[in-house]
Length: 499
Ligand SMILES: Nc1ncnc2c1ncn2[C@@H]1O[C@H](COP(=O)(O)OP(=O)(O)OP(=O)(O)O)[C@@H](O)[C@H]1O
Ligand SMILES: [Mg+2]
Image: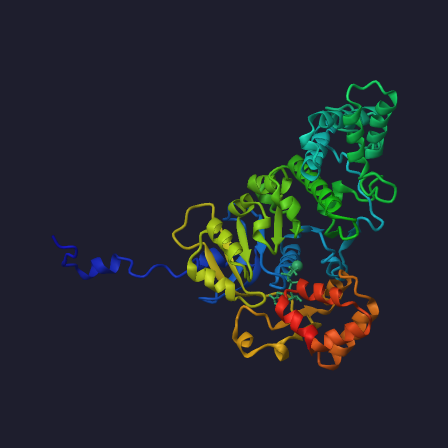
């Protein structure tokens, strides 16, 4: 028995056979769209096609963006939002965990909502929803953010008190609310529960006290960001141009997540009431950057919105440094995934597992420079080509005030040639400033550092930066933490301080 058999074949027969597998790039008709109805992103690496994004042929308009710190996630998001507003007049709501977009939104003429620094939202506001539905949403948020789910009795008490507060304020539970009436707040709910405590007749006083305690953390004087009359009109958020909801002023992750959940819920409800209409296109993009707490939990609306695909008139953009922080359902359901540089094998395994791209693409992703990206799109109809392709670079509005800090002077020969070690850290001036402010580095230190870099044509040695910061009394740990935050590796940071 032979394993190989020779065969006579005609020329035309050979021509029909596919000898080479298709090149790893979708054909141009899938990448190049009508410029008046799509968003230009960049040039493809293989064939140099101008890729413009449109969701017309995609399963849905939602987008996931991943990449290590400094890879270009926020840059992509900003570029994308600006063009979406030119092309589709799309509004944008950025749920801004670290206040990272604040400066840019101000510059672009958008609105800033600073929760914890003057702005409040009343999480009991109805914006057109029936009190019963809003109560359910608040219960879900508390479930995600606190341990309420473990205590059925406390859950029941809390839910009943929420409903009672609505009834007392004159809102029938199952009816569309009267817009002229003012919604109750969590303080009213606590009051009702407190009354029950005072009466002293409730069978399980301990449960009652704990229910009060849990709610009170969101209503303490000075920390009652969600228990006061709203300064933000949720109903109009999705038609207000560019809005940055800066959550960096809230005291901790729990508060930030509660705000983010509330905003998503409200937007989703608003869009549900308006319904999907293919002719209308996208009304708004909602951005969740580093909001892992709410991109992870199955019960979060971030997951529901992506899973329900095209049901709403808005696109969700979820960005994260760490793909394993994002619920896998997001990756398996979004229409588009943008992968910027990724370093960790674990993250790469996770992405390759859910998006199923080739080892060739995998090795490209690990070598990307700033702004280079691999893009995965899932089309509505099945296609005969690989869905992941490489973009030479995300082409955005070129920032004018770029500053670079270089580590080359302190690297070993071996490190110099190692592509895994980043040698240059570049930032736009405002971006650099806000990244340092986040680490509580004082204005004087930052200004001196910028001035020192200006003298070097905005391209300075890392040791110069350390010297200026230390001279201004910035303590060593802060400097270390900050360098870590921009993606510098520990060994190099340590060396910096020995030298
Ligand atoms: N495609 C690009 N072209 C030119 N500059 C870019 C590009 N992408 C990013 N940059 C610049 O690189 C720097 C880092 O980018 P960006 O802030 O978008 O990173 P990031 O992935 O959001 O990081 P982090 O996770 O720390 O927020 C910025 O100063 C930005 O202006
Ligand atoms: Mg960012």
